[in-house]
Length: 330
Ligand SMILES: [Zn+2]
Image 1 (cartoon, rainbow, N blue to C red):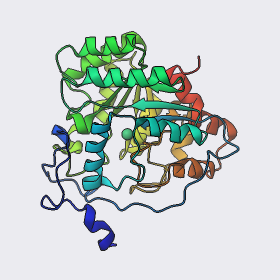
Image 2: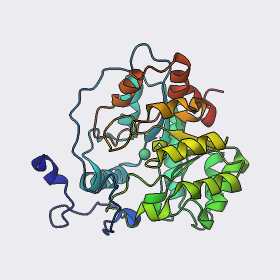
Image 3: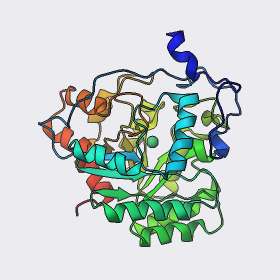
Image 4: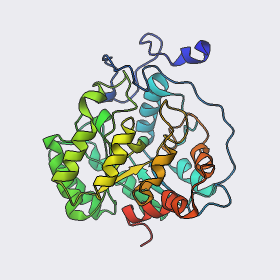
């Protein structure tokens, strides 16, 4: 096992820095809690992949796919190889779309995030252009919280056809209840469009400039839900690693959604979350994190298919909830 891991251990001498500047993912090691899922990089799973979405499935919406311009994809993959896991599918944007749609995924929700101020407009224009070209791709906008004109950046992106916002607390270095976010919450609330925000504490890694546990906590997210009742907020990864707390939050708040991204794979350490999927399936949606995966593209689909869920719950998780949240096909 050590031999498999060693090429991915964080050794500054052996691994060149990513080509693009990633200020908050810039490898300034910080002491991490013992539970850190990425205390050290994880090896790939060499599991077999399926040829298509399982036959019996309803139309699948993959609500968590990443599309970036080539140079940013390369920087992100370099970060993952060094701090996270080997990338099994280093595919560019057009290849990502072709790969998933040709295997039977019905719809893609495309997410991206700006790691520094000043780049969100061009990134949003990039994703809006992709969404115009591909009617089965729903694009979300991004912004760097607190950057000048943040609200206008989002309003312009919505006018350009983007259907929500994606933010990432760990990469962008902010807490969910940071004042800089109020204008983002206001823009989403007013437009009636959802915000997907990586606000859970995990997976945390010494490759982030901050300890995500110092930024993120379920209590901060609950404050946001209370202060912004019109905001529709989706927290990825079922709120990892505060799974039980997020499940309770889901029961208390009608403006919260959770996506299942990477949590069903049995790859990251964590509890069995299959019961959580039945709590409020109308508030939980499937997403994959493709193409930044260390395992087969359909691993989580197949595992979800084996969980003994009712047809109704499965339809919600695989598409119904996402179609409602993002206004797809309506
Ligand atoms: Zn993601």
